Length: 359
Image (tube, rainbow, N blue to C red; front, side):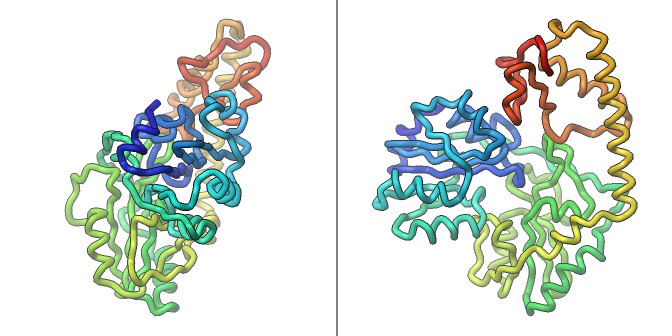
């Protein structure tokens, strides 16, 4: 873990607020994870506030027990992940004269607006959190896979955005929610651990031009069909009346004429067609076979000789036997005995234990 006070002094700051969200896979690599570096603990959702006098981590009920077992509570208060609680804690523990730093890549426009509205006397300063903590930028190659060989975007789905542009007299609509773009273009990125969603931005203009931009998370080794995040900023600067969903657009992406309109795809994305429903059923059946094989294996072996990590590896092995297997959506939760009380517990080489009574 890093010496936070030294870093705060170096940059003449009093406090940093940082968040992690499962809906944005920007910190999926643990070595690239600020939470792990600063707190020694990494929930899928959470907020950490680090200041010279007091620090706190905010997590929901899934992680409260794991946080108490893992985090040094002399250094960090552990509190409930509610935006109102975060506001209260800052107002109580950080004087308004101090500047609070945040990374606008990880905070959406609506989230920063909430903080600034609730803490009007405070000054919020944008920083690059990775550069701040001297974390080397780990980029990966962009490797797009088209689902079922659908090489073109789904025009019926894209029409939802085109209708929003027309109805609200926009020059363009910017989509920043990665899952929506994957749904619109039927694409996946299997280089992203657990979350096969490419980190892309989509700009659709009033002329129905569809422009994809690749996040800074990737090495740029493509040309022509996909532009860079830097090009997105310059393209936006030439437009007026650009629609966005503030809850999905990073505050690092700014424009003088953004107009908030809810993502028009969210409801439609939740409705599955017959082909999708059948595919979900097939996937569930295939995974059930892996689980049945695992149960047969564990019931026919001596439990005290099996560790939590053995369980994780064995379930993965049985899943890989199916030729359609691509990857896991999260690490298997295999918890023995007292570890079973920890809601989102995942074993590691350091904490894995043998099974005595309960798995």
